[in-house]
Length: 477
Image 1 (cartoon, rainbow, N blue to C red):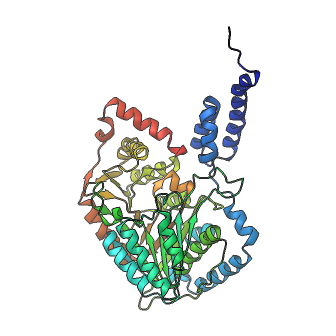
Image 2 (cartoon, rainbow, N blue to C red; image 1 turned 120 degrees about the vertical axis):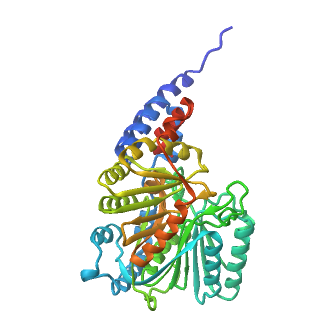
């Protein structure tokens, strides 16, 4: 007796391959990078059964819905944005003090670069959360909070109690957490916030039928704002590991920034747009600029993400690298740049710029960690210097350019930050601030070992193969 296969079953394989072909055409037309388009097209044609579902989830490079939602119901937000920009413009940088390249930045970001700001480095978790919790305790009107990761652990609970205490005093609290980054956050944590009057919302990207499988985007921003006057931005999330309390990572090296002045309004505007997506409401916030007393630092706020008209984060790095004359020092937990950024770093080193890139010695994401090794030979051949931080885990995202420019933010030097994540950077044009950053980074370099080409070329064949495969997959990550 022979087993007959139903006729419908025989149609499944051809149907998948036809769908794979159509999806590959969509990838070629819409994926932002050529490497990503090629990787997706090959996968969709060759392995459509697996690749098609993955493409639905991971293939999009533009956040459908975020822009449309603002266009549909954001007349009030547009009015607020205009008011915020006008308030910031009254403190914009003009004349001989205006740094080179600002016209470009202000065009792609839509925010003026302002003076009258005061930025202070916060090094590691204890100092950062002490300053942040002190600022929250002093709040009079409202507190805005946005984090990629929130854990319900010791630090997370301490933060929650501080927020609840202010809410019970009548201070309005708006709290955003990314639904993927904070997927382990207990429901009871959020329930307690709601019970105390805190407006807490998850930032998710899978809204509506068009975005049902749109889960590869992340809100990677870490923002805290108090009364529209003080803001905190940087690499630290809310969790015990960020305080150095994790047995897996040990010492956690990270950097945050405390900012006062008109530039705070730019950070607040980025939060407002995220809140509108997550909460569908427009909170009543202060949009008056407050110059920092006795300080006159020049600051540019640079929000970026997959809803931008331009590839803002990548363009920022390209311009910074091209304009560097003496040095460009970068710290990032992940180093998987796309080809244009990698080439610009090599060109900078070849023309004599002091290019230094500090990376962690410990891995936390295996594919990204492996991919990094493949960049080592070409970078070192061009004269760039790579370092591995050995005193715990390095997570800071800091950039130092020449003698007058430095940036602290949330963006890593990888494809995800360039194309898929909502990020934010604060760029300072101030020699005093850059000296503080230089001093901080020199201490970090003292805890590093220099990387050589042997770090990759001396590895076993299986390791080098795994690293190459991981790099091939980097556009899909």
